[in-house]
Each structure stands twice: as structure tokens, then as C-alpha cells.
Length: 336
Image 1: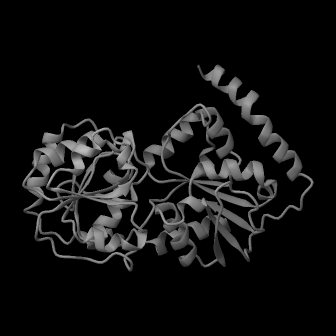
Image 2 (image 1 turned 30 degrees about the vertical axis):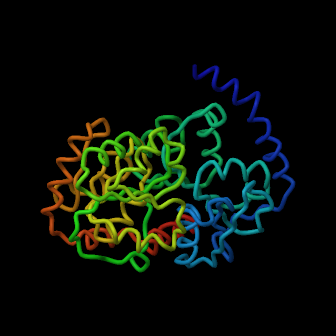
Image 3 (image 1 turned 90 degrees about the horizontal axis):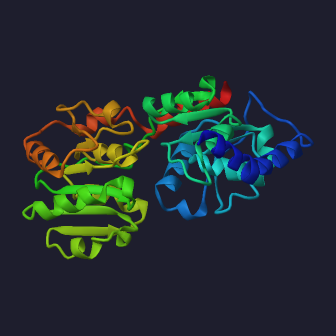
């Protein structure tokens, strides 16, 4: 299977990168130790979503004259001493369309493995080895990428962050439950549905987008205890989180997820599946609860009921995971 995958990558994709690499050899080389400009890159479509918020905040707290750039096809990147790609696939596309970046320093954020025909394991690892640094959001992902062939020296472990000045605390008094994610099968929509259905006396809020694509969406939206905030601007998130006392992250696979930190900074008590950095930032039974990825919804209902009695100031346990701290760590990677 791996041999076939490599053949497909070589025939359909690899030659495009080699054209860019060869063209870059004729361009001015400039990998500096002193930086006058860094560009944080995302798609225009992500500008008002979480990826857009990430690049704006990381650039804001950077000490390296950083700016943001948004373009759906990732073409015409501005000239810069270094580039930060908030999602790994953006780097691959930008590399093909902007050969000049290969003569600059490139740092790529990798959230979680999700191999597809277009972005197979062979394809992704080959491209990541062209970056200067790959930021892994948790140690599990870091080990998986190294085992797949990524140069270990290129990896850096940084838990992505949130903004304690943007999200504000609230008192947990109502027992309301919330979720925050775009719709997708790895987000475990069945768990969301079953919790809402089987706790009719509990108010649930869902912050996200694309949930109208869920086969049970119509049934769920008509439940009296369910409210859906569809495609809200990220600027409204602090107020939305303050409607929530208990935050559920039921995902089957994550790199973060960032909403867990956002909720914790809002003093929501988190209950999360054991994926991404959740086991790193949640001390089970202290500042949150953890459950196995394949747990039944009844186990999560049990934890929700236990969470009602937790009085800890969750926000205080998440303050170290700030955008400022994260941005300063990325600055150091550019300066290495």
C-alpha cells in the first residue's frame, strides 16, 4: 500500500513541487538570523474563523515585525524573511505557487494526521521535510510524524494557545452545557445528539458551522433544550462561552482543540475525550474530566452530573497557555 501511495504521489503531485524547487534555485536566497518581516498565512475563507483568529493573535504578540496575509489560493505571498503557515496543507500549496518561499524560513503548524488521496502520508511527510520547523500541538502527533519519516530535528512541541485578555471569566451557576466545533465525523456528532436527547432538563449550546449537514440536525434543532449559534463571528465567542458552565469536547481525533482552552479561560469546566492536547492541559478530576474516545454517551452524562459540584477556578489553570507565550516560542524558532 505504501509503495502504491508513493507511486501516486510521484506521478500526480511530486513533479509540481520539483518545478517550484528548481525555479527557486534561480531566485535570491535569504534565510536570515535577523528578521525584519514575518508573514502569518491563512486562507481568506478562514479570516473570521479560528484559523484567522490564530494568525492575527500570533502576529500581534510577535516581536519580529509580523503581519498577516489571507488568500484562498495562497498565491502572491508578499516578500518576507519568514512565513508561518497555520495549517500544514497551506504550506504545500504555497510552495507550489510561490517558489521564493523555499529560500526563506518556513514554520508549519501540524494539527493531526488526516491522510487522504490528495494528501497521503507519503505526500505530507515529504512536504513537511521541506519546512524549517514543524510545530506539533501534542506529543502523540510529534511521535507519529517522526515514526512516519519526518526529521525529528525539524519538530517542535508547542501547545497552541488562546487569549486570556479576549476571553473573560464567569461564575458557573446554571449547569448549562456547550460544544464548539465545525461539523465533521471526527467531531463525534452522534455524541452531541445523544447528550442533548437524553438530558432534556439540561440546556445545551452549540457554537459552530456546517451542522446543517448532519443527518439528525433537523431533529436536534427542534429539541427545546438546544440552541445553535451558526457561523458566528469569532469576536462574539467570549460572550457565547459565558452562556456555558460545562464544556464538552467529544472529538475522536484532534490536534488541540483550541476551544477547550477558550472554554477554560472562560471558567467553563471541561469534559474532553482523550485526544489532542486535552490530556496535557486537563488534570483528570481536578480542572476537568477526561474520557476515552470510544466512551458511550452515558459515561459523559455521568461526568456532567459530577461537574455540577466542581467549584475550582478553571481559568487560573489555563492562563499559561496564552497567545503571547506561544508567539514568543515561535519567534525563538524563527531566530534559531
